[in-house]
Length: 140
Image 1: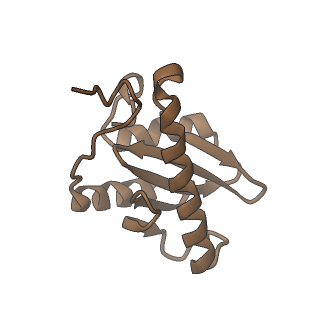
Image 2: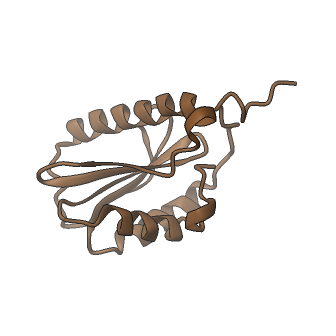
């Protein structure tokens, strides 16, 4: 039997989408967050979305493109899990926003936050809201 963990392949897990809808809404309660969404492997939105009345500076078409690209990058990073360890989160600080990703099994939480956010502090808060302890979060 092949150990998929050694190969860096996470077994698919059926997530409770309604649970992640609540978690995304809880994450959106953070003043520094503009968008929190659970994406599938192709970047399609499964739960969450944009904070009402808050701009994420992207059109719907651009958001779909960014989501697809982010989901693809998250999947590609998994091939290095054996050598480098599991990704806890990734962040991209841009001039106007910060975009972050948090792997959850074969899905990903994508965030768009204020540009001046402290990335590590925000990551700690998000992981706590996802129900994980910082030291044990391994993307699964």
